[in-house]
Length: 203
Image 1: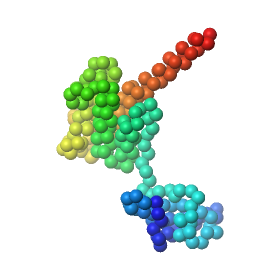
Image 2 (image 1 turned 45 degrees about the vertical axis):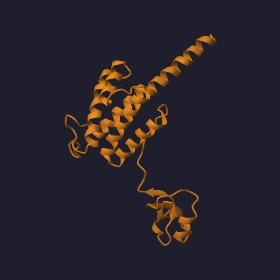
Image 3 (image 1 turned 120 degrees about the vertical axis):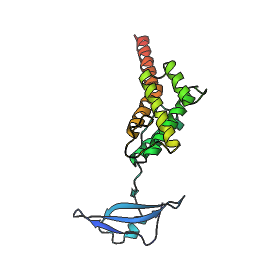
Image 4 (image 1 turned 45 degrees about the horizontal axis):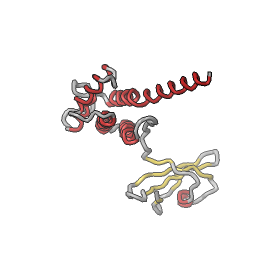
């Protein structure tokens, strides 16, 4: 990020001897603008020097939306799920649902379910008990909601409770349940089993 010359100014001063300076920055890669806010000692009297000689990174506006970590999930699926949460945090609900659906299908493919559409993949995962039956049923609702978003004809911003739709918060909860069941719980159970066997060997 590069501070745009002439854009820096004092935002406000505090009784603690600190001041908050703000400036317009341009991304060094895409040139998109952001506003940076920095606290500095009030002895600094030139905002442009404060913004161009930083020991700490500014607080950026707009702020990046909070995502979610998935340590046991394959990186490509984890990054998709993380981005779904980031979309939700900035109220990009269609994006959140579409990415949740994409992560769901990527999970099925990663586990070897490649035949048929996503509906068939969900059925096969449920039949093979990779997913509990109630999670499988809800996953199919997520599939329907994702289809509606992708076709841009079923999603309603204010009322997303139709039979083929799903509240975006529920969509993310369901995605997290699927990832927990397929990857994280499996990894944790394997670790618990490994530790138990190691303890038996030490006895």
